[in-house]
Length: 169
Image (tube, rainbow, N blue to C red; front, side):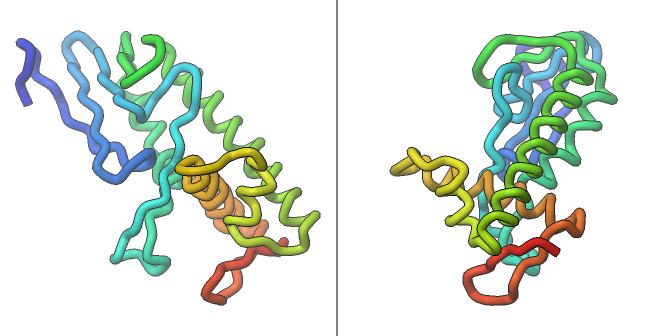
């Protein structure tokens, strides 16, 4: 794709949202990361439907974390995010982001252990007791993303009930 006098490579970057893309100029090694890579915060892995998935939804956080190595390999000299400051050290950002999500997954695991079992909504209320309005769905998205990671690791099991409950494996 050509724009602004540059030839951009388009990278589909699901994770934050299903239709998100990032643009990379390989000659200048500049990455327009949108909300996919942010210097100061981690993007929220938004809960979205996927009719082709057995769960009927995307595994947003799993997709997001799987995408990080691709951007490390691109090795951009400059990343221009959708908001927040520009940055250049994608390998460090990827490492910090993975560690953040590992710690959060450990916190979610301990919450499930303490509660005995919990739904994503119940966990989000424990994790973010003061959120309200639209932020509630962001809290549930965050909980579901970490539950997916823990389920993939075999640390939690999910019930087959309509309202999925998670418990320590």
